Length: 511
Image 1: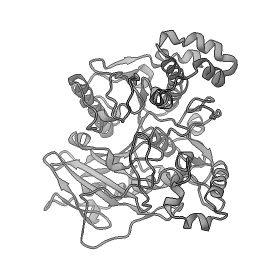
Image 2 (image 1 turned 30 degrees about the vertical axis):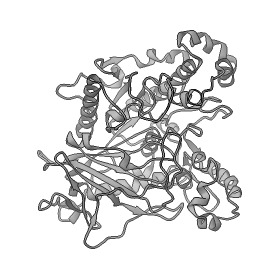
Image 3 (image 1 turned 180 degrees about the horizontal axis):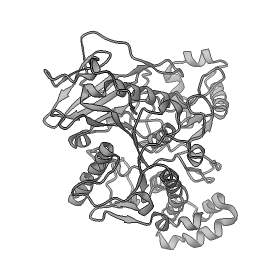
Image 4 (image 1 turned 180 degrees about the vertical axis):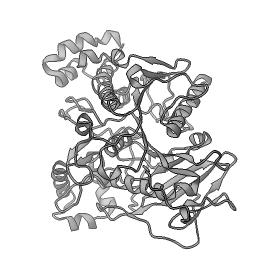
């Protein structure tokens, strides 16, 4: 989970032909599957089959990805592929200097499909500068009948960089995801999946990517449903909202191609380069040694052929691919950012000053509506302000806009006792924090559940896979989930119920 602190996975109609190798699931040996490029041997357990480290593309630095070449024989697919370049973070000790990193992983149920092919779910992991697909254990979702694909894609400066002479700057990770979806279209059937029923789902930076895919021309037809978890795609940033001193920005994660190109020119000087050839020849290690270079490019750029429009503006104009959507956020999104910026570092925020910086003449009204005494600490008050003003407002607008054209099911993850699975040593009250819902879908060894939380996790997995199967999360044994016009479903242990999301987050005040 990268919570992108520095400023802070599509298949249509045309499946492969029934006579192609990728359209015939292998039955003689369940551990071997023949893809369109060659055969792979994975791992078979009692509950699922797992194929890891399948190369789906190759790419030069800041170039569009290309489908991987074919191979002879059976490739081993029992270990993850290399992580894309990254330097890790205070909560994620992941490092890599390997640019040959465009791999994916496929998890399927152990037994043969019954009643037709299975729904396919393609996961775009969060984090803008760390992470990889194999960190997400898809066994629980596969056990409920889904074929789950998790993807590595280029991160940070290797995704979002711009420089004169580059084509479609700032979109290389997005292009990787599109290429992975084309791989799924060609190969889903070989793994028992339905290439005509693909759900793209992701969290945080992954959700930001899905907002982009909903509007990117080349993504049309590559997926049939979308799940956005804590997506910042509709967010702006008041001054100082993510880190002190950061100016206000009208978009959280999108920049123009010109903006990332200008920023790239500044960083090129720090790298000692005056042209693109020099930048492409630099060792990965040298690039990663420049402070903040990974975090500074945790964006997607618009204005070019890959992403012509800024996605939030396209959604407001109704210009997006018409697919059913399940989307939501957590009850206390911004606590993770505040806690990491202040409490983990044993600092105390100057709450009144932060509010004045962010809201200027409206600061007094904000302080009256969100007094410290109502929250118990300046950190929690500041987190409540930004959860409502940024995350809830953006999520509500996103779901409302989408619901004008397609079925939308809105949710709020509201387990305020969700286990903290990141390595933070503090007694800060994290609440239902940003990405705190991930262990409920992808088991995390450090997240120890109560019986009620285990039940919630099972119900969430049921909702998610039902939606992937039919476009509707409802099913036997699950509390009814209305479309967003009739309420947002609050997901908490022993308390799954529709709520008035706008009222809960005081969106009338922020209108």
